[in-house]
Image (cartoon, rainbow, N blue to C red; front, side, top):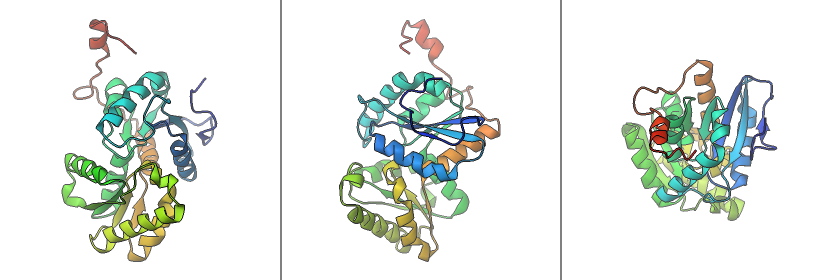
Length: 263
C-alpha cells in the first residue's frame, strides 16, 4: 500500500494491528520528524505510527484561525484516503484545530488533537495544569479552548514564551530552552500548577529540559503527542469509534445530493 508523504517515518512493526496516523497539519517536515522521534520510545506493542506532513500549499506553521482553516482544507484533500485507511488519527497541533472535527465528521475512527490529549491526561494525574505557549495570542486561543472543554477551574494558568512557532527552532537552542524552563517554573512556583503542558508540537523535543526544571518542585510535564498516541490506541483497543448519531454525522450524502462531492 502506498502511503504518501510517510516514507521513512514509520515507527513500530508493520505487522502490528493498529495504524495511528500522526497528522502534522503544517508543511514543516522537521516538526513531523520530531514528533515521530518522541513517540518512538512510547509506542504500545500492537501499534504503528505513520507520520504525515501537510502539502507545501499548507501554512508552514499554524498560528491563527485562518492558518487552521487553510491547513484543514489542504490535509483533507491531500490525505483523505490515508486517513480513511487508518485506525485512529492524531492532529499534532496544540490548538482547537478545525481538522479534528472535520475528521470526526467525515470518518468514524477515533480522532483527537494533542491539546485535548494533554489536558485530559493532566486531569487524571494532577489537580491543576499550566500551559507553556508560544506567542501571547496563542495563550488567548488556548484559554478559550480550555473554557470550552469545561476545565477552566482546573487550569492554573497559561504563560507565553513570546516565541513564534518557527523561532522554537531558528533561535539559539540554549536561549529557547532557557525561556521554556523559566516559563514552566513560573507556572509551577507562582501559579501552583502540578502538571505542565507543552503548548506546541514544536516543543516536543524540549520535554527533557522542561522536566529537569520542574521535577525538583514535584511537577510532571506532559507532551500531547505521546499522550495522544496512547490515548487513541486505548480507544481503538477498546473497540470505540466516533458516534455518528448527532454532532459528527457525516455530510457526505448531503454533499453528493448538492452535486458538490469535491472529495
